Length: 563
Image 1 (spheres, helix red, strand yellow):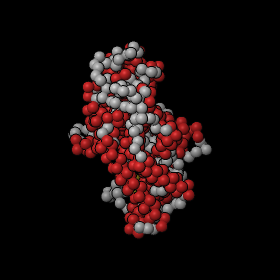
Image 2 (cartoon, rainbow, N blue to C red):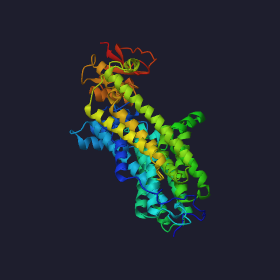
Image 3 (cartoon, helix red, strand yellow):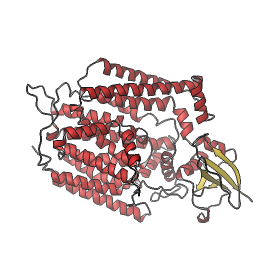
Image 4 (cartoon, one colour):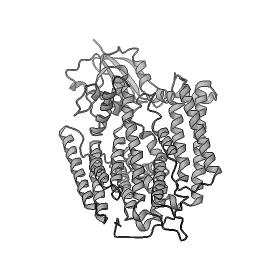
C-alpha cells in the first residue's frame, strides 16, 4: 500500500464498530439545511461588508459598471478580486425579474456555503481513509471497518465546522471571503482525495488556487500551493508527481489571473499587513472565533504527535497554520481567519476517537447550558416585541431600534417552535442515552449553534433587519430627497453608496467633487460616525441630519445646492 511519508508510527486511535456508527443521513441533511437556509429570505443586505459587496454585484447586473472593473458610484471595492462579484451578478441577472436582487445574490453564496460543508466532509473522509489514519486492530476483534471509521470521522468534522462560532455570521453574508473559504477548502480536499480519487484531487488543486486568487487572496494561493508541493514531495504515493504538476499549473493560473487583474487596475499582490503586532486582539479572536475546533485540534496534535508528518495530520495542520499566520500579520483579521476553520474542523475530528469521557461530558453540559440560555433569551425578546413583556426588555429594544415594527409571521413562529422542540429532543437523546458514536460530543455544539441561528433568523429577523439594514435610514431621507434624482456622495464608503442607490433608486457618484466632472447633481450626502459633526461646504445648503438608531449609529447628512 502507498505510504504518505517515510516516517511511520502507530495510530493512537482504538475504535470499535459501535463507535464508528455514522450519523443518520437524514439528520445530517436536516442539520445542514437548518444551518444554511435561514436568513436567505425576508431580509435586506446588512451593513457593512454584506451590503458593500452586494452593491458591486448589483451595479454589474444593472449595467452601471464594467464587468472588468466593478464599482458602485465610481468607487471600486478595496479587495475581493473579480470572481465573487461576477458570481453574484450572474445570479442576479439570471433570476431577474423573478427574484429580488439581494435574494438572488444570497442564493449564490448559500450554494457556496453548502459546497464548503460538503468539501470539508469529503476532505475528512478521505484523510481518515489513509493507512496512517486508520485505527489499530483490537486484540479480540470488533474494530471498526475503514469505511465506517472514515464516515464517522467526516461526520465529526462537519459537526465541528457547523459548531464554529466564526463561521456563523460571515458564512451567511454575500462577501468575497466566502468564496475564498471555498477555495481554501477545495485545496484541502485536493490534498486529501489523492488516494481514492486522484483525478478529482487534481482538478480540485487546479481550480481552487485560481479561485483564491480571483477572490482577493493571490498571495495566499501561492503559499498554499507551496504547502501542497511540500506535502506531495514528502509523500511516496504513486500519484504524487502528477498532483505536483497540477498544483504548479494551479499556481501559474493563479499568478496569471492576478497579473491580469493588476492590468485592469484591480488590487494585486498587496497585503493589508499591520505594522504593530496585535497579540492581544489575535488571542481574543482565536478564543471565540475558533471555538470549539481549536481546543480539539490541539488535542489531536498531542495524541497524534508521532504522526505529524503524515498527510492526514500534515495537510490540515499546514493549511490551518498558514492561514492563521496570514490573519495575524493582517492585524487579527477575522475575514482571513475564516479560511482556517475547515482545516481546524478536520483536525478536531481526529481527536474524537481518543476524547476522554470527562471532557466530552463537559462539552455536552456547557453546550446544553449555554445554548438553552441563548434560546430562552431569544424567546423572551420575541415576547417583548409582540406582547410587551418583559417590559424592561421591550423598552431596551425600542431604544436600540426606535420605531421598529414587530411583524408577525406564522411560518416563522412554526419554524422556531419546530427548531426548539428538535433541540429539546436532541438534549434528551444525548443526556438520557449512552451513545458510543465518535461524533456524539459535537452534536450538541453544532445543534446549539444551528438552533441559535434559526431562532435569530425567524423570531428576531424583523428586528435585526430594521436595525442592521439601511432601509429605515433611507426612508427618513426620502422625506426630503426626491425619488430618482442624481446624488453626489464624495468620500462616502461603498456600503452607504449602495444604500442610497439601492433603497432610494438614485444614481450616485462617490468620487470627490473635484473629480466627478460630467456628473450633474443638485443633492449631496455625507456619512458621519455617531459622534462626528457635519461639515459645511461652500455652495451647498445643509437640509438635515438623519440617523437610524439612537446609539452607535452612523449618520447621513443631506445637502442641496445653494442656488
